[in-house]
Length: 218
Length: 231
Image 1 (cartoon, helix red, strand yellow):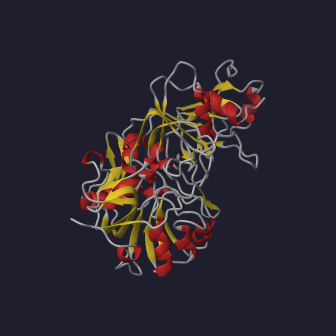
Image 2 (tube, rainbow over the protein chains, first blue to last red):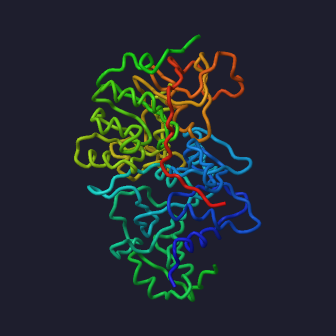
Image 3 (cartoon, rainbow over the protein chains, first blue to last red):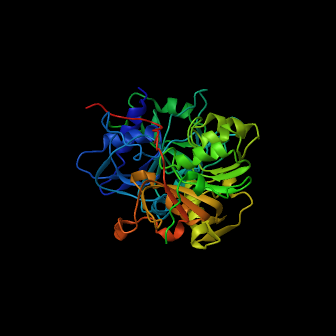
């Protein structure tokens, strides 16, 4: 069965390692914080200026001055810190953040990502995404395999304006975990009950399948 | 040096049509709402506004957009404002969208006397169009210029009459860099105290960057995305 958004987040959470600082984008990536594996410590950075982001506040305890990059009210963990936007992006550009998880509209087989603009239709802006993808060493994209019209989002080349070039290392969708290297998607895992053929048929970019592809272990 | 002015009207003296403004804040968090409301009343037009976001339709910078006071916006993300998107797609509003980190650094550079800098953000995208590219350590970077403003308008939690500022939580965001980059920088604060009342160790923005400071009459501090969990 294909994963839901929480399933995608749960699978991505398995990529977290002890001691990492992690930036989670808006949408599915935000959910990753709900599935931190037992026994490891990670700290979440939100690019609007907080390190050590905690869960949403209890009702009645919201603070208008304390939000995440998605403008949602949040709390902080023990040991948290606040800083200005220039310092925040110094952390990001300076590669002090070990993992970035973000959503995408399209990803290409060489790791290009498009997620900020549909010309003539939707122009929301790139926010911090271009800074993040240009600098982060380890970028995982969390997204659905196809768009709402049913078209594949894993392409030979992106058709939408790019956010960054050759930067995405891994993609986790409701169907599969794919690694991007040497100009191709490499199928690493498939969602429980999903066939390799289904993934193949929904992936337009070059897909490499090596031997038996294991199911995700969630 | 005493930077205190009596009220928002006095703080905005000299603001004129066609000027470039920097306005602090991220979303609706840490925006100078008293000053924005006053600019709406003043009706100043043809403004270029440098601000990470554009408010929402009926609060923050969205009010200036509704009122057609803005000629050009320089921002990184404008997704929460339908009127903005409409004016942008119809060509009524000039918009320069730039990566958030580049925006922050361009403001910082403006205040710090750095005319331009190289960053990897935006390389290979339409943001890089027309910009010089140079390779450092095998990686391409693009040249981004510093930003300046006729007025920088920031919001702080506490300030003293010297113009020293302390921000609260994530309401800090763009305010410290913009404070440095204004020819005239106005600080509106929730609480204005006499010089000597704030611990110098805790100052985020030193008063040298501030020309005018006042205590805002009222802070609505609207929350854009109220998210909670149950007990």
